[in-house]
Length: 447
Image (cartoon, rainbow, N blue to C red; front, side):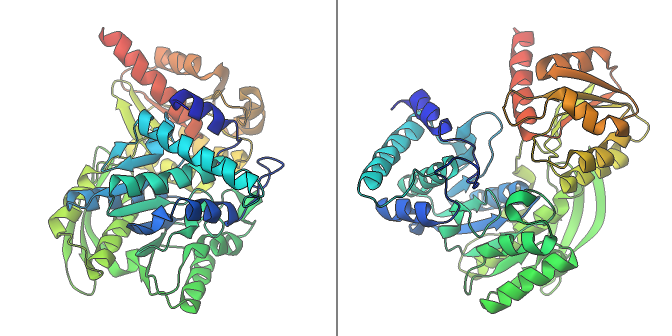
């Protein structure tokens, strides 16, 4: 199959996350991915790895960690989800996306393998979208000669397809409510799913947690003899300031006194915690023989790129992308607006998927905006713009309903003056769609 044929087949498998409702034949356990990995010769065992779970901060922590390791001269693999514009974004080697040709070649090999396994009765159902892409990443990293791969969990942890790796370090970022239908309706239930990535004797880097989530993780780690390093307890931030919304801080390691200048180009106060997670991972890897200098840690954090998370596209008016798709992420964006946009007119372009806590997100975000424009990306899971307005308009001081996302963006721009700010938020699908549209629009305008 060529690249286009590979994508068509892959997306025919259904929703991206391996959830029980994905298709009649879908299964939610590790049997499929284990069978696939064995048939591929267990490529995931041919390099070292870091495994990252959590509700928010997984992607930024992964980006910081990968950038640190690459800056230290270590050949890296990075596996993340979802993608914003192209599926190739999910699989990177030394910062470069997998090529279309390599994607198609690997997919064709894996699909032929799957068909053989199904015929032999070794697979009871076709692997899901996420299982196939995960297997593809495992194999691609091995072929590329990656020395250390960072894997971001897709959903939960315990039963996520990435959870067959035995990493050098496990990481659990901030836990909050999201995907409750799959992970549970209490923080203790959700934390138990995230804690499922903890392996016997493998150290855990743990972000700051609510007490009930922290207790679950510490208990599971103790049961498995996994030492826990709480990143924001073992590091102290001093002299915190902001430059264009990006945090600047001196971070000291409590026990050793080692100091790091943390200056990420990712916006938001919360990125300090994500950077501390990455510093803790680097320190754990150094204890396991990794050659990672303090300078590589500082430069890696400064160089890290993570699109779609308070990403600024332009000025005058300011346009930002932020995939605040759950209440925790909405609170982080609300804090950013409070700290940086008080007294300025803010317009929100807002969309959401059907499984999201729209009422809670709206209550957190909408009071910070002069206007909310309800819209929707081109995906079947999206709530219609009209229905979104019915659900969230009561929290907005002024609102409009413009179903077409590109039209909504153009309308927001047309009404904005140079000192206004537009935030595209609520859904990563909306962020990806309008990020792609903005780039095409900018390219056309430059001609």
